[in-house]
Amino acid sequence: MELKFVDPRALKDNPDKARRSKSSPQADALLLATIRAVGIVQSPVVAPEADGGNGYVIDAGHRRVRQAIAAGLEEIAVLVIERAADGGAMRSLAETLAHEQLNPVDQWRAIERLVALGWTEEAIALALALPVRQIRKLRLLANVLPAMLDQMAKGDMPNEQQLRTIASASLDEQKEVWKKHKPSKTDPQVSWWSVAQGLTKRRMYARDASFGDDLAQAYGIAWGEDLFAPADEDSRYTTDVEAFLGAQQEWMANTLPKRGVIVEAGQWGEPKLPPKAERVYGKPSKSDHTAMYLDRDGKVQSVAYRMPAAKNPKGRNGADVEADGDDIVVAAKPRPDVTRKDIEMIGDLRTDALHEALSRAPIEDDTLMALLVLAFAGQNVTVASGARDISCYGAAGLGEHAARLFDQEGRLAFEMDTLRIAVRSLLIDVLSCRENRSDSGVVARVAGDIIVADNFLANMGTEDFLSCLSRQALEAACADTSVLPRQKVKDTRAALVEHFKEGRFVHPSALFAPTPEKLTSWLKMNEARQQPEDDGTPADQDELDGDAIVEPPHDYAGDDDAEGFREAAE
Image 1 (cartoon, one colour):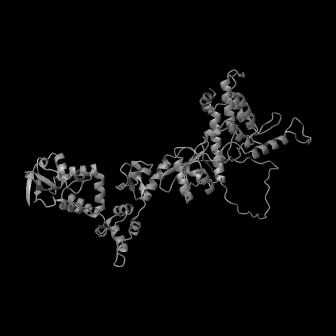
Image 2 (cartoon, rainbow, N blue to C red; image 1 turned 90 degrees about the vertical axis):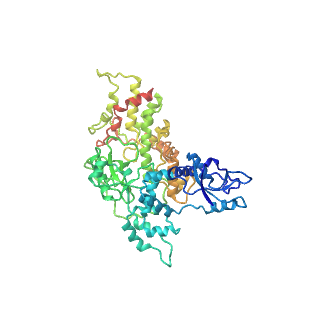
Image 3 (cartoon, rainbow, N blue to C red; image 1 turned 90 degrees about the horizontal axis):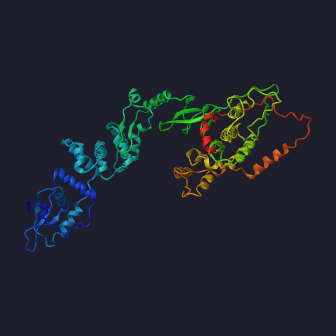
């Protein structure tokens, strides 16, 4: 056996080498970087060339020789041995089998040893062809309690999530937990889940923070970095939960919008709105309020809600009728496919879609006139007669739409586009599908069906809407999709939300077309009203109560919508 320095280009490959499959480009890059940084650590083994040649044949170290040539080395040290009878085949196989992946614990300790010898993290990363972030992660793992590392070196390894929790804790905390859960003779395996559970701390992430660096400094928040998180996301975090939530609360107080309030979150993370408030799931109007709150993760969330209108004073005979004290037993009913909350959401979404369609969808002039008749037939409309003395509100709130049709001299003079804009804005004020006093009833459903307002319905494949559906309704929603029903309802719902994230889902019960039964019932009811019995009421009077009040028009039906109406008219 002899050690020589030779030109690597003069060495010849062994045709009987054991490793014949090609190595990966990543492995070759790692070996090349190591040779450039520290040279060849283990010299290749060569044998004199047979058949009278004066060269050398590689027995072991073909990759090292190739990467030495790629690194531009002029000569390398090789170990010259006598040629075996089998041409070195057994020696090559034995050496290949002896090569084994380094134990992870040994790798962590080896990197720490290199740092102690003066190597920088950047130099180690360059030599091993690894990212600097990976080297820092390995150094963090090396700071695990030595007793735990000894147990891991035996092959008793925790999973990545548990290892991540353990490595992030201090050594003092690790010692306390290890005393309770270290292995014994009767139970040599460690319950790493229990160890990680004892070291788990709630984290608040910087990516969820709405406040800036100024509030972070004011509350003394120091961000740590989660080296186990993906490198392309903000993984900064803090375990000072109180300081994080305090900074979030102050940020909400400083940025609270007009008509906004800060509320608390309920048991399930939902906002606790003021009493009698109605949450707005559609497009909020200018008169709606905003509630800001912190969810379970400490993120700032906001929702819109609407307060009911103040009740009008009642007349002399307007006392409420009190129900008797008899107890009413209500039989248990199966949960319907669409709950009351879903019905309210559908009403809001229908109204937004109806208003959007009335603003932008192509509508013929004769259809507009028919819709106007339907709008005034709605159950949320009170028609004031000019021969009766009514409240000051009356129908005056609708006058702004007619005012557009007059010129500056007070003459009724308008273009056809102006008329269309006035009619559309009037219809928007009148027609509604909301589940409150403004509901127009079946006529609004007919109007939406005529102008195909279904095309303007928002995507209902959201967590808010689907969480209100029953299991049967959720499984029915999977029918025309590639989503298969899961064993758990929440898994089916999550799959549907992911499926419709880029698409659009409309529940069949949200479509505008009313059922034939509802439409027939409404037609019969209004046919009966066309021929009332003669009760002696003069023909020039109707049954309108003098205390009735007509709501003023909505805030969003003003002149700001004129441009959208004009585009639709064109």
